[in-house]
Image 1 (tube, rainbow, N blue to C red):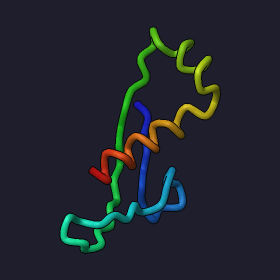
Image 2 (image 1 turned 90 degrees about the vertical axis):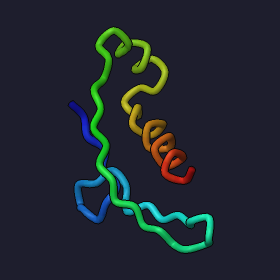
Image 3 (image 1 turned 180 degrees about the horizontal axis):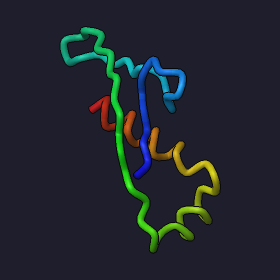
Image 4 (image 1 turned 180 degrees about the vertical axis):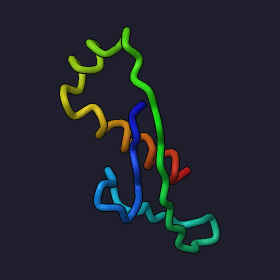
Length: 67
């Protein structure tokens, strides 16, 4: 199990995420995501992203939080 964290913690992958509500109010998100890599897709994942596979996952999570 892998963990991705957006928080004030020194171990977090990214800091607190800030966004605006539909009313224009500032909202701060602290989140922890847990995921499991699919063994059959590890080679393809490595060929596409190398050791930096978390960056696209972080971008996707930020996009989801902004919706």
